Length: 260
Length: 310
Image (tube, rainbow over all chains, first blue to last red; front, side, top):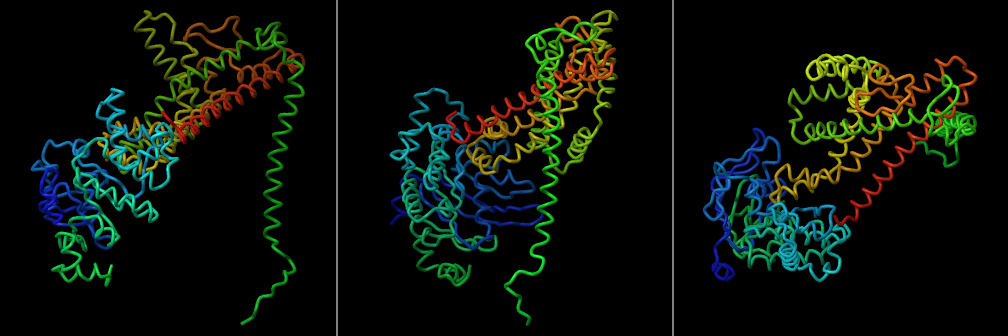
């Protein structure tokens, strides 16, 4: 059902082909081939060390910031290769944003945090910046809480608010895809619920790929789920199938808590 | 098997007592030394410390008058030194910490060089300054631009400041590197994930957060520069000058050197002794004031960062 609803607009899909990641000589994951559909939430699950975070980071070339890391294979965003010759990693990251496990606002004001990416892109016009900042914060469901203190430090916000601010900051540059690496794992249940609700909302406009250790969270927020184990993609299907009738026994074992 | 008693043993915590005594005595010794120096200097220096002393030149063979030229020279030296050392040191640290591959041979060589630079005795810097800045650079400039006339090819304020800058460079580099590594990797990643180039991340996120640490380096460099004498002995400091330096290639008087001159070169030691005390007091106050002002700037920047709006 969800799948059909979301097929209206397929832009923002990620086609991953034979993608492998190495740290030095050691293979961390792959080869993985999968197509992450646009404008949906795709959850990556699996036990610690299974390669799902490595996989996530290779979707916007953040891996390149790690010395000794090497990527093979191909990832295409709407048929445009992000690892192609002459493709700039910086430009890739403007279209494929990222939210981290630990909220990491800059020690700047709330406003300046959200405006950061826009200013990097050369936007100077105050009213344009202000409009985009407001839109992004509203989109991240944070506006009501911060609208009267936009020029106060972001470090004064609560953990959950900081994480939503980081989401707003990623949204401000209007990427096609948002990657989230366990975005709620450091938050209390109420803040987590806020974030989950937000993730669901975001899928209307963005492709969301989320790494999570929390099975219920994957079931609640995602349309599709990919199960990783020992660096391999074991199974990828709609969340409904993965959680009710997975074809692989290892998937079932993990989902039902028999290991991991 | 054997149960330990709950009652104290005959020598309760004897190690603690010994350590407490030893560390306490050591601390006391340091405080006493500092107090003796300060009390002696203040008691003997204050009576001679008049407005005239601060604003006049020495006169009557150093037995009367003031020390204004030496104050002026010290401040000019420290400012010029900072202008030279801070950008070079910060740039070196940024290169070493952000761009250079830490395992590369060249990086290791530069690091070793910086560490060794910090260990070179300051008199050697003085000789280096004389050979390199005064004779080679200054002499070369004279040949090129002044037809062999001695303009830059002699001890001067600029060469003393540059020599002092070389001396304080390691301090700035080490402090800046420390400040850079204290910037959380999380915010670097956040910046990169928003499509920032490395340069943008350094300029907009890393450096602003490192500024208080860099200022710490500047403070240390300044207090060292204000107190050192050896590097300027051959490169620009003068025994006595009737006028203030008014170009970069003039010689200058400096407080530390003036103290040395008053203490050892005076024809009448008893007559100069009160002047000597007062000069030492001024040197101490000036160094403390430079430090204090930099500390104030740093703590204000820190507060600004923690609840910033800029």
